[in-house]
Image 1 (cartoon, rainbow, N blue to C red):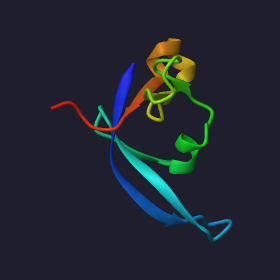
Image 2: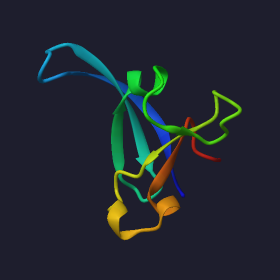
Image 3: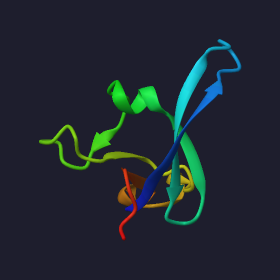
Image 4: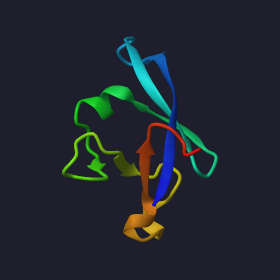
Length: 86
């Protein structure tokens, strides 16, 4: 399973609603960068927890840089973490 590390929270304008949306930016360990609507992560979006017994554990989402149809199930997940390891 790959990992991605949060590095910035930005505000953008939703092109449909014209409302402000906070987007949490992540750096994937492959070097790519992607963002997720922050409310998805704080309001119980459709994701898995790294530790189902701990609701504060890392979220696990489908990896945005992998074609899931070509790979094994665990290979196309990415674990979202707050800070990169030092």
